[in-house]
Length: 365
Image (cartoon, rainbow, N blue to C red; front, side):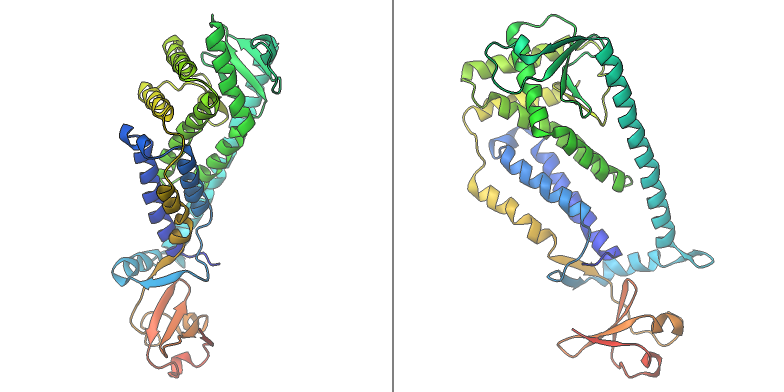
């Protein structure tokens, strides 16, 4: 495995395309007729793993694309101050951004913990069995509070928060079952993994869209799990619950951010999408096998190629100092050709016995 500018570049390109596909699937109404949450689960795992591992592997096929990669490499190696090159400056900014966002993330988690303690001390305490007759599952704590305007699970606590407003028995049952699935799925940990990905790629704009779509997917998955044993009539009542809660939200969610789960987001378009998806799901529960096979091949395909630069053979100090050349190595390919590798740059050379290469090691492919 090897990290390079080329491996990062191809990772960003492929991730952008996969995020775009996910965005399309979770934005357009007609798309939910082709897939279910099983397909989206695999697609999300593929793009997240791909972004966390921006590396090239032994089976990765190198494709020489000088028209694209040469200008990128030249720009990255341009010296902007003394011996500092552009890529070194960008790496410094990248690392500083990660550190700053990590500090903000840790602070947000601490604020959420403090807020939860405050809510816990000023709420009515119940258990799920107090609201649902003959409840046989794990009996999580329920806090009724005026600190929230929408049902939620807050932070890492296995506690359900509900607003201190009138809720019918049917609505309350649906809400509690919904939030229980968030706890069972450990969705808060999924959110934190995605937050770490956002911190890692804080400068890559599509990653924020990915986070939003994963939040939507988590709600869709829970909708599906909650209503799976329901009859069609019960599913219709569940959808009515979603609509009722949306109507009763008077203000924006107080703790909208990294450490909470809401049954309803304050976005009517998203709610409409979830309801339409549920209605279609009453008749279709699984994605077609052909689409599943396609998405299962994505992990191999996304790591199968990498783009590299190619420059003309350097003559001693025309492009690099002799000391730079001596730090590199020469690859002898199986077809008899030679390449000089200097950091992230590769050059085709015709004569490895030239004087400027006398101290450069030769490695057979």
